[in-house]
Image (tube, rainbow, N blue to C red; front, side, top):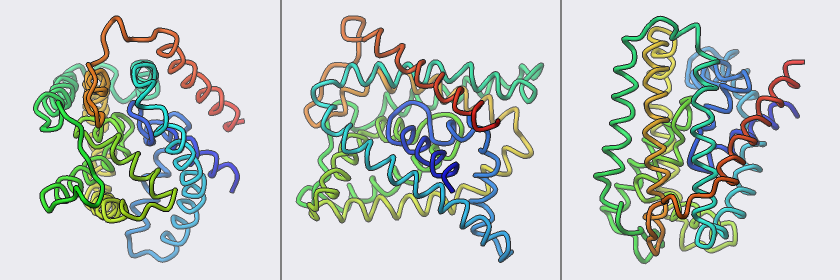
Length: 291
């Protein structure tokens, strides 16, 4: 129980910030395949497998909810003042995670250099989404009075895409929300809801429906890709991670009051290195858990 709760807690810390995904943390801590199979089994017809998957995911979920709520309460109050330092941490988390994923999957990708085309495709995809995002130059307001049918549909599909990324060991779903201009608004909405401001409930319901729909629609595809086309999938994931570096640098432009993208003048090297320290700590935790 405690072990899986700790795993879920670590996943939530990753899912709540742009950079590496909860899937990456599951991957680095050595339980990613079990996580994917459990999600798949939960939607299957085998009652015994469903029961086992439910208890495994419930234990993860307890730790995830605790970690996510703590992250939201802390992060939402820091963004406006420390956005460049936080973005530097996110950049470090993502950049330092790339060689870690390569190391973990070296047997799957070794010698299969043709897969680099998938890396290029993944990087270009994220860059294009960031570049052409309709919210790249202005923040989005998601309170009840600002909610429209068009915005609701946008939030729903953004949530579907984001949850897909959250279960992949690569780009973070939070990074995609950052690209779509919804990361800071959604984090703020969750914080307001935790403070019993129910005006944000409709937005969170729409977002939640998108998340559930995304999981049901994508999990079997993810499982198939990792089982049948693992090298190509890993190469594509690496490309998504590389592309997300650009998205993180553009993150300040998605605030309610947009700020300039991260530059050499605003980039914080100490906070960037902190991202690497956090990942090193996760590697140490993985080694301890394996023992």
